[in-house]
Image (spheres, one colour):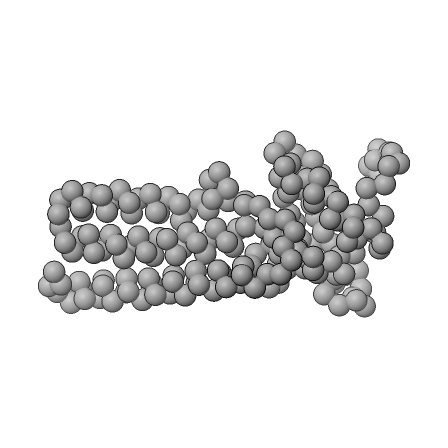
Length: 195
């Protein structure tokens, strides 16, 4: 099964990467479990809502594993099993990282990246533009209350149409006291374009 030094290095490296992927997937799952009062969530991956590369990797590994089982090659079956576990962990971490969560406390764009999480009280303004499959929001926020406009940060978020009404209600509820949003008056946006 393991003949040469190259085989030993391959199995060792595969073991390290598999362990690392398992740790990353576990951290992602724990971060999602730690979220409190989730009001809305949706998937945003490139392949029908799923992460593209990890999904393609899983499909490739399953094909290779099926071939190994057909050939009854023990070392290849074990290798495909380890790659399957690595791919499953990668898929889990990617899926949860690309999923968007909106809680009572704020917007979580990536559960593994705290800098992409903003609290409602940090948001200073927002802009929305409608597209065919989603509404694109740009939130302008600051880290500290006294930040100057030069230190404002933007967070972009695509909200699918099936979540649009719920998201607008939540924005109106959370930001309505500080930001005038979703008022019934018509605003002539032509006046803001350059002449």
